[in-house]
Amino acid sequence: MHGYLATICRDLGGEALLVGSVADHVHIVATLPRTLSQAELIEGLKKPASKWIKAMEVRYCGLFWQRGSGVFSVSQSQLEAVLQYVQKQEEHHRSCTFQEEYRELLRRPKIEFDEQ
Image: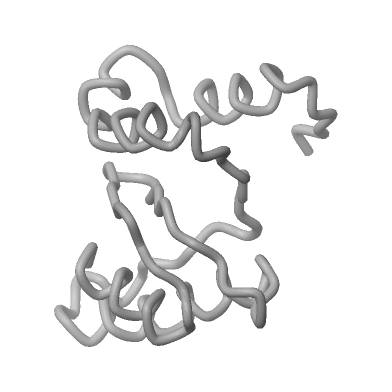
C-alpha cells in the first residue's frame, strides 16, 4: 500500500517523501504541487487506493476511508523530525491512540477543533 500511495502522489504531481501507517491510519509526508489543492490531493489518493485495496482481497471489500483528513504544512527545519515521527508510528501508538495523537497535533499549535 505504501508504494502504491507514493506512486499515486507522484502521478498527481507531488512527491511522497515517506508513507507510513498503522492499523487505523496513514501518514504521508509529501510535497504538494502548485496545481493541486490539499483536498484534491487527498481525494486523488483516497479513491484509487480504496479501489486498489478492495481488488486485492475479498476481506478488504468492507474497508473505507474516514470522512475528512488532516493536512499540516512542515517547514524545512522540521522536516527531519516529522520524517522520524512517521517512521516510528508503530512504537508511538503503543502508548497513545490515533485520537489522542490527533488532538495533540491540533492543540500544540492552538488550532481550534470540534470533536463532533
